[in-house]
Amino acid sequence: MSGTGDVHETPAPEAHGTAGPQGGAARSGGGHAGVGGPDAGGPDAGGPDAGGPGGAAPSGGSFGLTRFHQLPLRSRLALLIAVAVAFAVALSAAACWLITRDRLTEQLDTSLSTVEVNSDYVQAISARCAGSPLNVRFQPTPYTIQLVSASGYVCTSPNKAPIPAQRVDQAVADGRLAGAVHTTKDENGAEMRVSTVPYRGPIADAQGNRLAISVAAPMDQVTDPLNHLALVLLVVAGVGVLGAATAGLWVARAALKPVDRLTAAVEHVARTQDLTIRIPTDGEDEIARLSRSFNAMTAALAASRDLQQQLIADAGHELRTPLTSLRTNIDLLERSERSGRPIPAADKEALLVSVKAQMGELAALIGDLQVLSRPSETGAGGASALRVVALHDIVGTALERARLRGPSLTITADLDPWYVRAEPTALERAVVNLLDNAVKFSPSGGTVEVRLAGGALTVRDHGPGIPPDELPHVFERFWRSPSARSLPGSGLGLSIVARTAEQSGGGVRLRNAPGGGTQALLTLPGATTPPPDAPGSAGAAPGRAAAPGEQGAPGEQTGPGEQGAPRA
Image (cartoon, rainbow, N blue to C red; front, side):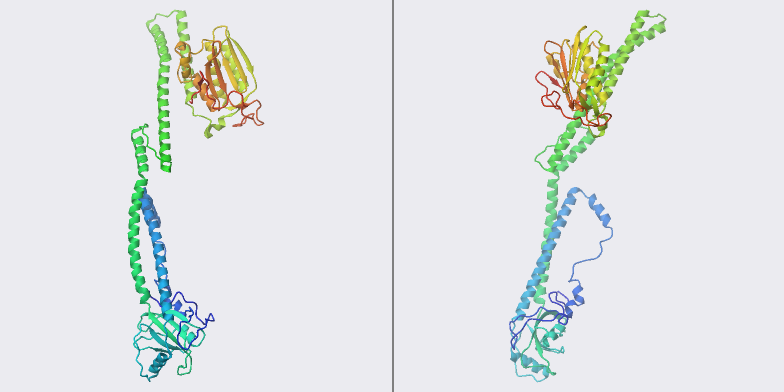
Protein backbone atom coordinates (compact mmCIF):
# COMPACT_ATOMS: atom_id res chain seq x y z
CA MET A 1 0.00 0.00 0.00
CA SER A 2 1.52 3.33 -1.01
CA GLY A 3 0.31 6.88 -1.51
CA THR A 4 -1.11 9.45 0.80
CA GLY A 5 -4.69 9.43 -0.34
CA ASP A 6 -7.60 7.52 1.21
CA VAL A 7 -10.06 6.23 -1.31
CA HIS A 8 -12.84 6.17 1.32
CA GLU A 9 -12.74 9.84 2.14
CA THR A 10 -15.12 12.47 0.83
CA PRO A 11 -14.11 15.84 -0.73
CA ALA A 12 -12.48 18.57 1.36
CA PRO A 13 -14.62 20.26 4.02
CA GLU A 14 -14.34 23.67 2.36
CA ALA A 15 -16.39 22.36 -0.54
CA HIS A 16 -18.92 20.21 1.39
CA GLY A 17 -20.23 21.64 4.68
CA THR A 18 -21.12 19.69 7.78
CA ALA A 19 -20.11 16.73 9.94
CA GLY A 20 -21.87 14.95 12.76
CA PRO A 21 -21.68 16.04 16.43
CA GLN A 22 -18.88 14.96 18.68
CA GLY A 23 -19.24 15.29 22.43
CA GLY A 24 -16.96 15.09 25.45
CA ALA A 25 -13.91 16.99 26.61
CA ALA A 26 -11.68 14.03 26.15
CA ARG A 27 -11.55 11.73 23.09
CA SER A 28 -14.36 9.23 23.34
CA GLY A 29 -15.89 6.52 21.25
CA GLY A 30 -18.13 8.99 19.39
CA GLY A 31 -18.50 8.76 15.66
CA HIS A 32 -16.18 10.50 13.25
CA ALA A 33 -16.83 11.86 9.81
CA GLY A 34 -15.37 10.00 6.89
CA VAL A 35 -13.99 13.16 5.31
CA GLY A 36 -10.91 13.35 3.18
CA GLY A 37 -8.68 16.28 2.49
CA PRO A 38 -6.80 17.46 -0.49
CA ASP A 39 -4.33 14.67 -0.02
CA ALA A 40 -7.05 12.21 -0.88
CA GLY A 41 -6.68 13.27 -4.47
CA GLY A 42 -2.90 13.53 -4.37
CA PRO A 43 -0.55 12.25 -7.00
CA ASP A 44 -0.36 8.83 -5.47
CA ALA A 45 -4.07 8.31 -6.03
CA GLY A 46 -3.39 7.72 -9.66
CA GLY A 47 -0.29 5.63 -9.04
CA PRO A 48 0.24 2.01 -9.83
CA ASP A 49 -1.80 0.81 -6.91
CA ALA A 50 -4.81 2.87 -7.85
CA GLY A 51 -5.70 1.16 -11.07
CA GLY A 52 -5.13 -1.92 -13.11
CA PRO A 53 -2.80 -2.19 -16.04
CA GLY A 54 -3.86 -0.16 -19.04
CA GLY A 55 -2.49 0.95 -22.34
CA ALA A 56 -3.07 0.18 -25.94
CA ALA A 57 -3.38 -3.32 -27.30
CA PRO A 58 -0.06 -4.87 -28.24
CA SER A 59 0.99 -4.57 -31.82
CA GLY A 60 0.58 -7.61 -34.02
CA GLY A 61 -2.83 -8.54 -32.54
CA SER A 62 -4.11 -9.81 -35.86
CA PHE A 63 -1.01 -11.96 -36.24
CA GLY A 64 -1.63 -13.46 -32.79
CA LEU A 65 -5.25 -14.19 -33.70
CA THR A 66 -4.11 -15.91 -36.89
CA ARG A 67 -1.64 -18.01 -34.92
CA PHE A 68 -4.45 -18.95 -32.51
CA HIS A 69 -6.67 -20.16 -35.36
CA GLN A 70 -3.77 -22.23 -36.69
CA LEU A 71 -3.58 -24.22 -33.45
CA PRO A 72 -5.22 -27.65 -33.29
CA LEU A 73 -8.80 -27.63 -32.05
CA ARG A 74 -7.97 -29.40 -28.78
CA SER A 75 -5.20 -26.88 -28.06
CA ARG A 76 -7.58 -24.00 -28.72
CA LEU A 77 -10.19 -25.53 -26.41
CA ALA A 78 -7.61 -26.06 -23.64
CA LEU A 79 -6.31 -22.51 -24.09
CA LEU A 80 -9.80 -21.02 -24.01
CA ILE A 81 -10.64 -22.99 -20.85
CA ALA A 82 -7.42 -21.85 -19.21
CA VAL A 83 -8.08 -18.21 -20.15
CA ALA A 84 -11.65 -18.41 -18.87
CA VAL A 85 -10.54 -19.94 -15.58
CA ALA A 86 -7.70 -17.43 -15.27
CA PHE A 87 -10.15 -14.58 -15.80
CA ALA A 88 -12.56 -15.99 -13.21
CA VAL A 89 -9.76 -16.61 -10.71
CA ALA A 90 -8.37 -13.11 -11.29
CA LEU A 91 -11.77 -11.56 -10.65
CA SER A 92 -12.26 -13.66 -7.53
CA ALA A 93 -8.77 -12.86 -6.24
CA ALA A 94 -9.23 -9.13 -6.88
CA ALA A 95 -12.59 -9.16 -5.13
CA CYS A 96 -11.13 -11.07 -2.18
CA TRP A 97 -8.20 -8.66 -1.92
CA LEU A 98 -10.41 -5.57 -2.09
CA ILE A 99 -12.90 -6.90 0.45
CA THR A 100 -10.08 -7.86 2.82
CA ARG A 101 -8.48 -4.43 2.45
CA ASP A 102 -11.76 -2.72 3.27
CA ARG A 103 -12.37 -4.92 6.29
CA LEU A 104 -8.85 -4.44 7.66
CA THR A 105 -9.06 -0.69 7.14
CA GLU A 106 -12.45 -0.64 8.82
CA GLN A 107 -11.07 -2.57 11.80
CA LEU A 108 -8.16 -0.16 12.07
CA ASP A 109 -10.52 2.82 11.94
CA THR A 110 -12.65 1.23 14.65
CA SER A 111 -9.62 0.68 16.88
CA LEU A 112 -8.49 4.29 16.38
CA SER A 113 -11.95 5.58 17.26
CA THR A 114 -11.96 3.67 20.56
CA VAL A 115 -8.66 5.10 21.83
CA GLU A 116 -9.30 7.27 24.93
CA VAL A 117 -7.03 10.29 25.44
CA ASN A 118 -7.61 11.96 28.83
CA SER A 119 -7.08 15.60 29.67
CA ASP A 120 -3.94 14.97 31.74
CA TYR A 121 -2.22 13.34 28.80
CA VAL A 122 -3.23 16.25 26.56
CA GLN A 123 -1.90 18.78 29.08
CA ALA A 124 1.38 16.82 29.37
CA ILE A 125 1.85 16.81 25.57
CA SER A 126 0.99 20.51 25.33
CA ALA A 127 3.40 21.45 28.16
CA ARG A 128 6.19 19.40 26.56
CA CYS A 129 5.72 21.17 23.24
CA ALA A 130 5.60 24.58 25.05
CA GLY A 131 9.03 23.93 26.60
CA SER A 132 7.82 23.41 30.19
CA PRO A 133 7.35 19.68 30.49
CA LEU A 134 5.42 18.33 33.41
CA ASN A 135 6.73 15.59 35.61
CA VAL A 136 4.70 12.99 33.79
CA ARG A 137 5.88 9.62 32.54
CA PHE A 138 4.51 8.77 29.12
CA GLN A 139 3.50 5.12 28.79
CA PRO A 140 4.58 3.33 25.61
CA THR A 141 1.73 3.11 23.10
CA PRO A 142 1.46 1.80 19.54
CA TYR A 143 -0.44 4.93 18.59
CA THR A 144 0.85 8.32 17.62
CA ILE A 145 -1.09 11.04 19.47
CA GLN A 146 -0.74 14.68 18.55
CA LEU A 147 -2.49 17.98 19.00
CA VAL A 148 -3.41 19.89 15.85
CA SER A 149 -4.23 23.60 15.82
CA ALA A 150 -6.36 25.37 13.27
CA SER A 151 -3.23 27.05 11.94
CA GLY A 152 -1.64 23.65 11.17
CA TYR A 153 0.71 23.46 14.16
CA VAL A 154 1.14 19.93 15.55
CA CYS A 155 2.34 18.72 18.92
CA THR A 156 3.27 15.02 18.90
CA SER A 157 3.62 12.52 21.72
CA PRO A 158 7.18 11.56 22.68
CA ASN A 159 9.21 9.07 20.60
CA LYS A 160 6.83 9.40 17.66
CA ALA A 161 7.46 11.02 14.30
CA PRO A 162 5.28 14.10 13.71
CA ILE A 163 2.55 13.78 11.13
CA PRO A 164 2.02 16.92 9.03
CA ALA A 165 -1.43 18.39 9.56
CA GLN A 166 -3.79 18.08 6.63
CA ARG A 167 -6.57 20.47 5.77
CA VAL A 168 -9.17 18.12 7.15
CA ASP A 169 -7.32 18.09 10.47
CA GLN A 170 -7.32 21.89 10.56
CA ALA A 171 -11.01 21.91 9.63
CA VAL A 172 -11.74 19.65 12.62
CA ALA A 173 -9.67 21.94 14.87
CA ASP A 174 -11.55 25.11 13.95
CA GLY A 175 -14.91 23.35 14.25
CA ARG A 176 -15.86 23.06 10.59
CA LEU A 177 -15.82 19.24 10.77
CA ALA A 178 -16.87 16.95 13.56
CA GLY A 179 -14.14 14.46 12.71
CA ALA A 180 -11.99 13.07 9.93
CA VAL A 181 -10.24 9.84 9.05
CA HIS A 182 -7.56 9.74 6.36
CA THR A 183 -4.30 8.17 5.34
CA THR A 184 -1.07 10.15 5.11
CA LYS A 185 2.65 9.85 5.81
CA ASP A 186 4.67 10.99 8.80
CA GLU A 187 7.93 12.88 8.53
CA ASN A 188 9.85 9.59 8.30
CA GLY A 189 7.79 8.54 5.28
CA ALA A 190 5.83 5.84 7.09
CA GLU A 191 2.24 5.51 5.96
CA MET A 192 -0.19 6.27 8.77
CA ARG A 193 -3.93 6.00 9.30
CA VAL A 194 -5.09 9.13 11.15
CA SER A 195 -8.34 9.75 13.03
CA THR A 196 -8.92 13.36 14.13
CA VAL A 197 -11.64 14.65 16.51
CA PRO A 198 -12.16 18.06 18.20
CA TYR A 199 -10.66 18.69 21.64
CA ARG A 200 -13.19 20.19 24.05
CA GLY A 201 -10.83 20.86 26.93
CA PRO A 202 -9.42 24.14 28.27
CA ILE A 203 -6.13 23.98 26.35
CA ALA A 204 -5.63 26.17 23.26
CA ASP A 205 -2.67 27.13 21.11
CA ALA A 206 -0.59 30.29 21.60
CA GLN A 207 -3.10 32.36 19.63
CA GLY A 208 -5.99 30.98 21.63
CA ASN A 209 -7.29 28.81 18.80
CA ARG A 210 -9.07 25.58 19.51
CA LEU A 211 -7.28 22.27 19.08
CA ALA A 212 -8.01 18.80 17.68
CA ILE A 213 -6.63 15.46 18.77
CA SER A 214 -5.27 13.04 16.14
CA VAL A 215 -4.71 9.39 16.88
CA ALA A 216 -2.68 7.54 14.23
CA ALA A 217 -1.43 4.02 13.70
CA PRO A 218 0.90 2.57 11.03
CA MET A 219 -0.79 1.19 7.94
CA ASP A 220 1.47 -1.86 8.23
CA GLN A 221 -1.39 -3.47 10.11
CA VAL A 222 -3.28 -3.38 6.81
CA THR A 223 -0.59 -3.58 4.13
CA ASP A 224 1.38 -6.49 5.57
CA PRO A 225 -1.60 -8.91 5.67
CA LEU A 226 -2.67 -7.67 2.25
CA ASN A 227 0.75 -8.31 0.74
CA HIS A 228 0.78 -11.80 2.25
CA LEU A 229 -2.74 -12.42 0.95
CA ALA A 230 -1.76 -11.19 -2.53
CA LEU A 231 1.13 -13.67 -2.60
CA VAL A 232 -1.13 -16.52 -1.50
CA LEU A 233 -3.78 -15.58 -4.07
CA LEU A 234 -1.14 -15.40 -6.81
CA VAL A 235 0.13 -18.88 -5.98
CA VAL A 236 -3.37 -20.31 -5.73
CA ALA A 237 -4.40 -18.63 -8.99
CA GLY A 238 -1.33 -19.93 -10.79
CA VAL A 239 -1.96 -23.48 -9.58
CA GLY A 240 -5.64 -23.16 -10.49
CA VAL A 241 -4.92 -21.90 -13.99
CA LEU A 242 -2.33 -24.63 -14.56
CA GLY A 243 -4.77 -27.26 -13.31
CA ALA A 244 -7.53 -25.79 -15.46
CA ALA A 245 -5.30 -25.88 -18.54
CA THR A 246 -4.41 -29.51 -17.84
CA ALA A 247 -8.03 -30.45 -17.20
CA GLY A 248 -9.09 -28.50 -20.30
CA LEU A 249 -6.61 -30.39 -22.45
CA TRP A 250 -7.83 -33.70 -21.05
CA VAL A 251 -11.48 -32.74 -21.55
CA ALA A 252 -10.76 -31.54 -25.08
CA ARG A 253 -9.04 -34.81 -25.95
CA ALA A 254 -11.90 -36.86 -24.51
CA ALA A 255 -14.56 -34.73 -26.19
CA LEU A 256 -12.84 -34.75 -29.58
CA LYS A 257 -12.27 -38.49 -29.79
CA PRO A 258 -15.46 -38.92 -31.89
CA VAL A 259 -14.25 -36.10 -34.12
CA ASP A 260 -10.91 -37.88 -34.49
CA ARG A 261 -12.75 -41.05 -35.52
CA LEU A 262 -14.82 -39.07 -38.01
CA THR A 263 -11.70 -37.38 -39.38
CA ALA A 264 -9.95 -40.73 -39.75
CA ALA A 265 -12.98 -42.14 -41.55
CA VAL A 266 -13.15 -39.20 -43.97
CA GLU A 267 -9.42 -39.43 -44.66
CA HIS A 268 -9.79 -43.18 -45.23
CA VAL A 269 -12.61 -42.61 -47.71
CA ALA A 270 -10.64 -39.90 -49.50
CA ARG A 271 -7.56 -42.12 -49.66
CA THR A 272 -9.15 -45.45 -50.59
CA GLN A 273 -12.61 -44.46 -51.93
CA ASP A 274 -13.99 -47.17 -49.66
CA LEU A 275 -17.60 -46.17 -49.04
CA THR A 276 -18.40 -49.20 -46.88
CA ILE A 277 -16.83 -47.69 -43.76
CA ARG A 278 -19.22 -46.77 -40.95
CA ILE A 279 -18.68 -44.83 -37.73
CA PRO A 280 -20.15 -46.23 -34.49
CA THR A 281 -22.73 -43.81 -33.03
CA ASP A 282 -23.82 -43.59 -29.41
CA GLY A 283 -26.07 -40.95 -27.88
CA GLU A 284 -27.98 -38.02 -29.27
CA ASP A 285 -25.39 -35.24 -29.08
CA GLU A 286 -24.06 -33.19 -31.98
CA ILE A 287 -21.15 -35.57 -32.61
CA ALA A 288 -23.50 -38.56 -32.78
CA ARG A 289 -25.76 -36.69 -35.20
CA LEU A 290 -22.77 -35.78 -37.33
CA SER A 291 -21.62 -39.41 -37.34
CA ARG A 292 -25.06 -40.63 -38.37
CA SER A 293 -25.18 -38.02 -41.13
CA PHE A 294 -21.77 -39.16 -42.35
CA ASN A 295 -22.89 -42.79 -42.34
CA ALA A 296 -26.03 -41.87 -44.27
CA MET A 297 -23.97 -39.89 -46.76
CA THR A 298 -21.50 -42.70 -47.39
CA ALA A 299 -24.36 -45.19 -47.70
CA ALA A 300 -26.08 -42.95 -50.26
CA LEU A 301 -22.82 -42.49 -52.17
CA ALA A 302 -22.19 -46.23 -52.13
CA ALA A 303 -25.70 -46.93 -53.40
CA SER A 304 -25.32 -44.28 -56.09
CA ARG A 305 -22.00 -45.71 -57.22
CA ASP A 306 -23.45 -49.22 -57.29
CA LEU A 307 -26.35 -47.99 -59.40
CA GLN A 308 -23.96 -46.24 -61.78
CA GLN A 309 -21.85 -49.36 -62.12
CA GLN A 310 -24.95 -51.49 -62.63
CA LEU A 311 -26.27 -49.05 -65.23
CA ILE A 312 -22.99 -49.10 -67.11
CA ALA A 313 -22.84 -52.89 -67.02
CA ASP A 314 -26.48 -53.26 -68.11
CA ALA A 315 -26.09 -50.66 -70.84
CA GLY A 316 -23.00 -52.42 -72.15
CA HIS A 317 -24.83 -55.72 -72.16
CA GLU A 318 -27.85 -54.29 -73.98
CA LEU A 319 -25.72 -52.45 -76.51
CA ARG A 320 -23.73 -55.57 -77.33
CA THR A 321 -26.63 -57.37 -79.06
CA PRO A 322 -27.61 -54.69 -81.62
CA LEU A 323 -23.97 -53.82 -82.25
CA THR A 324 -23.12 -57.45 -82.92
CA SER A 325 -26.04 -57.77 -85.29
CA LEU A 326 -25.05 -54.55 -87.05
CA ARG A 327 -21.46 -55.66 -87.42
CA THR A 328 -22.52 -59.06 -88.83
CA ASN A 329 -24.84 -57.51 -91.40
CA ILE A 330 -22.30 -54.88 -92.45
CA ASP A 331 -19.58 -57.56 -92.74
CA LEU A 332 -21.82 -59.54 -95.10
CA LEU A 333 -22.40 -56.49 -97.27
CA GLU A 334 -18.69 -55.64 -97.24
CA ARG A 335 -17.60 -59.18 -98.23
CA SER A 336 -20.18 -59.17 -101.01
CA GLU A 337 -18.78 -55.96 -102.45
CA ARG A 338 -15.16 -57.06 -102.03
CA SER A 339 -15.59 -60.52 -103.55
CA GLY A 340 -17.72 -59.30 -106.46
CA ARG A 341 -20.42 -61.85 -105.65
CA PRO A 342 -23.56 -59.81 -105.27
CA ILE A 343 -26.16 -60.75 -102.67
CA PRO A 344 -29.59 -61.53 -104.06
CA ALA A 345 -31.80 -58.46 -104.06
CA ALA A 346 -34.30 -59.92 -101.58
CA ASP A 347 -31.53 -60.90 -99.15
CA LYS A 348 -29.85 -57.52 -99.51
CA GLU A 349 -33.14 -55.76 -98.84
CA ALA A 350 -33.63 -57.89 -95.72
CA LEU A 351 -30.11 -57.02 -94.55
CA LEU A 352 -30.71 -53.30 -95.00
CA VAL A 353 -34.02 -53.53 -93.16
CA SER A 354 -32.29 -55.37 -90.33
CA VAL A 355 -29.53 -52.74 -90.19
CA LYS A 356 -32.11 -49.99 -90.09
CA ALA A 357 -34.03 -51.74 -87.33
CA GLN A 358 -30.90 -52.25 -85.26
CA MET A 359 -29.97 -48.60 -85.69
CA GLY A 360 -33.44 -47.61 -84.53
CA GLU A 361 -33.11 -49.91 -81.55
CA LEU A 362 -29.75 -48.33 -80.69
CA ALA A 363 -31.20 -44.82 -81.02
CA ALA A 364 -34.13 -45.75 -78.77
CA LEU A 365 -31.80 -47.32 -76.20
CA ILE A 366 -29.55 -44.27 -76.14
CA GLY A 367 -32.57 -41.99 -75.80
CA ASP A 368 -33.87 -44.01 -72.86
CA LEU A 369 -30.46 -43.91 -71.21
CA GLN A 370 -30.36 -40.12 -71.61
CA VAL A 371 -33.78 -39.82 -69.97
CA LEU A 372 -32.73 -41.97 -67.01
CA SER A 373 -29.40 -40.19 -66.63
CA ARG A 374 -30.98 -36.76 -66.23
CA PRO A 375 -31.15 -35.51 -62.60
CA SER A 376 -34.47 -35.28 -60.86
CA GLU A 377 -36.23 -32.01 -61.74
CA THR A 378 -38.52 -31.86 -58.72
CA GLY A 379 -35.99 -29.99 -56.62
CA ALA A 380 -35.28 -26.28 -56.46
CA GLY A 381 -32.94 -26.38 -59.43
CA GLY A 382 -35.50 -27.97 -61.78
CA ALA A 383 -38.76 -26.49 -60.57
CA SER A 384 -38.98 -24.32 -63.69
CA ALA A 385 -39.37 -27.44 -65.90
CA LEU A 386 -42.61 -28.39 -64.13
CA ARG A 387 -45.86 -26.75 -65.14
CA VAL A 388 -49.55 -27.46 -65.11
CA VAL A 389 -50.49 -29.67 -68.07
CA ALA A 390 -53.67 -31.40 -69.19
CA LEU A 391 -53.12 -35.12 -68.68
CA HIS A 392 -56.17 -36.00 -70.81
CA ASP A 393 -54.68 -34.12 -73.78
CA ILE A 394 -51.35 -35.91 -73.40
CA VAL A 395 -53.12 -39.28 -73.22
CA GLY A 396 -55.13 -38.39 -76.37
CA THR A 397 -51.96 -37.62 -78.29
CA ALA A 398 -50.34 -40.86 -77.12
CA LEU A 399 -53.45 -42.82 -78.17
CA GLU A 400 -53.05 -41.60 -81.76
CA ARG A 401 -49.49 -42.93 -81.86
CA ALA A 402 -50.56 -46.21 -80.26
CA ARG A 403 -53.28 -46.74 -82.89
CA LEU A 404 -50.70 -46.25 -85.64
CA ARG A 405 -48.40 -48.86 -84.06
CA GLY A 406 -51.22 -51.38 -83.51
CA PRO A 407 -53.58 -50.99 -86.45
CA SER A 408 -55.12 -54.41 -85.85
CA LEU A 409 -56.02 -53.58 -82.27
CA THR A 410 -59.11 -51.96 -80.87
CA ILE A 411 -58.14 -49.20 -78.46
CA THR A 412 -60.95 -47.71 -76.40
CA ALA A 413 -60.60 -44.55 -74.36
CA ASP A 414 -62.62 -42.90 -71.61
CA LEU A 415 -60.83 -39.72 -70.55
CA ASP A 416 -62.01 -37.28 -67.91
CA PRO A 417 -60.30 -33.89 -67.63
CA TRP A 418 -57.36 -33.93 -65.23
CA TYR A 419 -54.65 -31.31 -64.76
CA VAL A 420 -51.34 -32.18 -63.16
CA ARG A 421 -48.05 -30.47 -62.41
CA ALA A 422 -45.34 -32.25 -64.37
CA GLU A 423 -42.75 -31.95 -67.14
CA PRO A 424 -44.78 -32.26 -70.36
CA THR A 425 -42.18 -34.11 -72.44
CA ALA A 426 -41.35 -36.64 -69.74
CA LEU A 427 -45.02 -37.24 -68.93
CA GLU A 428 -45.88 -37.83 -72.58
CA ARG A 429 -43.02 -40.31 -72.93
CA ALA A 430 -44.22 -42.17 -69.83
CA VAL A 431 -47.78 -42.45 -71.18
CA VAL A 432 -46.47 -43.56 -74.59
CA ASN A 433 -44.38 -46.26 -72.92
CA LEU A 434 -47.40 -47.62 -71.05
CA LEU A 435 -49.45 -47.75 -74.26
CA ASP A 436 -46.58 -49.25 -76.28
CA ASN A 437 -46.21 -51.95 -73.64
CA ALA A 438 -49.92 -52.79 -73.96
CA VAL A 439 -49.79 -52.77 -77.79
CA LYS A 440 -46.68 -54.94 -77.85
CA PHE A 441 -48.18 -57.74 -75.75
CA SER A 442 -51.72 -57.64 -77.08
CA PRO A 443 -52.71 -60.41 -79.51
CA SER A 444 -53.74 -59.47 -83.05
CA GLY A 445 -57.32 -58.24 -83.06
CA GLY A 446 -57.24 -57.72 -79.31
CA THR A 447 -58.50 -54.81 -77.28
CA VAL A 448 -56.65 -52.22 -75.21
CA GLU A 449 -58.77 -50.31 -72.69
CA VAL A 450 -57.66 -46.86 -71.55
CA ARG A 451 -59.44 -44.92 -68.83
CA LEU A 452 -58.59 -41.67 -67.03
CA ALA A 453 -60.69 -40.82 -64.00
CA GLY A 454 -59.88 -39.02 -60.76
CA GLY A 455 -56.17 -38.76 -61.54
CA ALA A 456 -55.79 -42.51 -62.21
CA LEU A 457 -54.79 -43.58 -65.72
CA THR A 458 -55.58 -47.26 -66.27
CA VAL A 459 -54.21 -49.13 -69.30
CA ARG A 460 -55.37 -52.74 -69.68
CA ASP A 461 -54.46 -55.22 -72.36
CA HIS A 462 -55.69 -58.77 -72.94
CA GLY A 463 -52.33 -60.36 -73.53
CA PRO A 464 -50.58 -63.21 -71.71
CA GLY A 465 -50.08 -61.25 -68.49
CA ILE A 466 -47.00 -61.36 -66.24
CA PRO A 467 -45.98 -64.38 -64.16
CA PRO A 468 -46.26 -63.57 -60.43
CA ASP A 469 -42.57 -64.25 -59.83
CA GLU A 470 -41.65 -61.63 -62.44
CA LEU A 471 -43.87 -58.83 -61.11
CA PRO A 472 -41.27 -57.58 -58.56
CA HIS A 473 -38.78 -56.94 -61.39
CA VAL A 474 -40.86 -55.15 -63.99
CA PHE A 475 -39.65 -51.64 -63.04
CA GLU A 476 -35.96 -52.57 -62.85
CA ARG A 477 -33.68 -51.05 -65.44
CA PHE A 478 -32.92 -53.31 -68.42
CA TRP A 479 -35.04 -56.12 -66.98
CA ARG A 480 -37.00 -58.02 -69.62
CA SER A 481 -39.19 -61.05 -69.21
CA PRO A 482 -37.62 -64.21 -70.70
CA SER A 483 -40.70 -64.61 -72.87
CA ALA A 484 -40.23 -61.09 -74.27
CA ARG A 485 -36.53 -61.22 -75.10
CA SER A 486 -37.30 -61.71 -78.79
CA LEU A 487 -39.48 -58.60 -78.93
CA PRO A 488 -38.05 -55.14 -79.61
CA GLY A 489 -37.31 -52.96 -76.61
CA SER A 490 -34.56 -51.92 -74.25
CA GLY A 491 -36.08 -52.86 -70.89
CA LEU A 492 -36.07 -49.21 -69.82
CA GLY A 493 -39.60 -48.16 -70.68
CA LEU A 494 -41.26 -48.98 -67.35
CA SER A 495 -38.26 -47.56 -65.44
CA ILE A 496 -38.86 -44.25 -67.21
CA VAL A 497 -42.57 -44.43 -66.30
CA ALA A 498 -41.74 -45.03 -62.63
CA ARG A 499 -39.22 -42.17 -62.57
CA THR A 500 -41.64 -39.71 -64.19
CA ALA A 501 -44.45 -40.69 -61.83
CA GLU A 502 -42.23 -40.16 -58.80
CA GLN A 503 -41.01 -36.76 -60.05
CA SER A 504 -44.63 -35.67 -60.47
CA GLY A 505 -45.59 -36.79 -56.96
CA GLY A 506 -47.49 -39.89 -58.03
CA GLY A 507 -46.86 -43.58 -58.52
CA VAL A 508 -47.27 -46.47 -60.93
CA ARG A 509 -48.02 -50.15 -60.47
CA LEU A 510 -48.57 -53.20 -62.61
CA ARG A 511 -50.73 -56.21 -61.90
CA ASN A 512 -52.45 -59.09 -63.64
CA ALA A 513 -56.01 -58.15 -64.54
CA PRO A 514 -58.93 -60.40 -63.69
CA GLY A 515 -59.79 -62.55 -66.73
CA GLY A 516 -56.28 -62.30 -68.19
CA GLY A 517 -54.00 -59.58 -69.42
CA THR A 518 -52.11 -56.87 -67.59
CA GLN A 519 -53.38 -53.72 -65.96
CA ALA A 520 -51.09 -50.68 -65.51
CA LEU A 521 -52.19 -47.94 -63.11
CA LEU A 522 -50.52 -44.49 -63.22
CA THR A 523 -51.72 -42.14 -60.45
CA LEU A 524 -50.88 -38.42 -60.39
CA PRO A 525 -52.14 -35.72 -58.00
CA GLY A 526 -54.01 -32.89 -59.64
CA ALA A 527 -57.44 -31.38 -60.21
CA THR A 528 -60.32 -31.52 -62.69
CA THR A 529 -59.91 -27.81 -63.46
CA PRO A 530 -56.70 -25.86 -64.04
CA PRO A 531 -55.72 -22.95 -61.76
CA PRO A 532 -56.33 -19.44 -63.14
CA ASP A 533 -52.70 -19.00 -64.18
CA ALA A 534 -52.30 -22.49 -65.60
CA PRO A 535 -51.73 -21.63 -69.31
CA GLY A 536 -47.99 -21.36 -69.78
CA SER A 537 -47.35 -20.88 -66.05
CA ALA A 538 -44.18 -22.42 -64.68
CA GLY A 539 -44.42 -24.26 -61.43
CA ALA A 540 -48.13 -23.47 -60.96
CA ALA A 541 -49.76 -25.70 -58.39
CA PRO A 542 -52.86 -27.68 -59.29
CA GLY A 543 -56.13 -26.35 -58.02
CA ARG A 544 -56.70 -29.16 -55.52
CA ALA A 545 -55.31 -32.50 -54.44
CA ALA A 546 -57.01 -35.74 -55.32
CA ALA A 547 -60.19 -36.11 -53.32
CA PRO A 548 -60.51 -38.82 -50.71
CA GLY A 549 -61.30 -42.12 -52.29
CA GLU A 550 -59.72 -41.20 -55.62
CA GLN A 551 -56.87 -43.20 -57.08
CA GLY A 552 -53.34 -41.90 -57.32
CA ALA A 553 -52.61 -40.36 -53.92
CA PRO A 554 -48.87 -39.61 -53.63
CA GLY A 555 -46.93 -42.25 -51.74
CA GLU A 556 -49.67 -44.89 -52.15
CA GLN A 557 -48.41 -48.35 -51.29
CA THR A 558 -48.92 -51.22 -53.67
CA GLY A 559 -51.60 -53.78 -52.84
CA PRO A 560 -51.18 -57.54 -52.64
CA GLY A 561 -49.76 -58.94 -55.84
CA GLU A 562 -48.94 -55.45 -57.16
CA GLN A 563 -45.56 -53.96 -57.86
CA GLY A 564 -44.98 -50.34 -56.86
CA ALA A 565 -42.74 -47.98 -58.73
CA PRO A 566 -39.24 -48.08 -57.29
CA ARG A 567 -37.32 -44.91 -56.84
CA ALA A 568 -35.11 -44.10 -59.80
